[in-house]
Image (cartoon, rainbow, N blue to C red; front, top):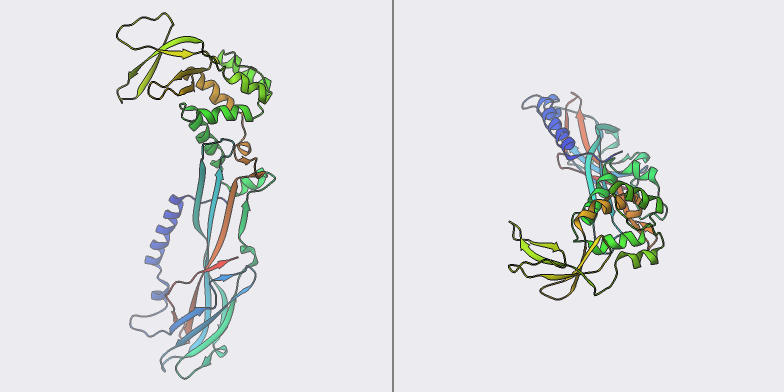
Length: 348
């Protein structure tokens, strides 16, 4: 019931090609140069509800040296699946993870025989108007934007590693640098971390992060809007040409560099002003990122994808089945002809 990986599908495809090379069904049923029935057919529809039937019209004929015995409809079943989840806990980070796959769940098998007497001769060829059945177990599956979370459904529909990979990617976006500083701050304010969680991380990282759980007070604690200068910094460039902010003490003296102010803020933040635009720049100190990463790792997967505006979880799973039918018309020597034009019926 899981999505198949592409490597497995490719292997199945190779196996299918190899088996055709060894056991060609047409070659096995005819001798070189032997006549077989000429066959064509059309389906009344390319969609069908599971449990109902598909109507078709087949036309066939053979030489006077042979007689038609019967016809058969064979069908393989393929399955297409897609699974999507989108982060909603963050205000600007728009991350969506999706996986999809197609696989053959049943090789071609005979699903319905037809006596030749059912066909009508129209003066040129035999015409068979008939139907073939579709199993009622092949109904499509859809699970989209549920209002109530079901871990059982998620585990049934999604690959085992989907959840952990999703959360790891979101956490990496928020903590690898301060690109998503505003999102990290928003997550801290919105998610109800417990005082015990803060205490555990303070002990682990030897930090003194506030254990406050009230959202309004957490907002005030995040940083202090002050013009008090507490340190200085100067800019250097690394070997890739990126700017490096070097924080130094207030009394630091170096005539070879230009010093700028760092203003009072919470101990896990640096607050300064852009040398180019004069706008305020605030970001988490690198030595605090490990703490922040552990903190937001407490957030379970469903909370990352919960849309608090629409009150739904932003997941969407789809499973569709397709019938791949083939018609075979046999003569009285057991040899058959078939229509080689591919057909497909989507089940709904």
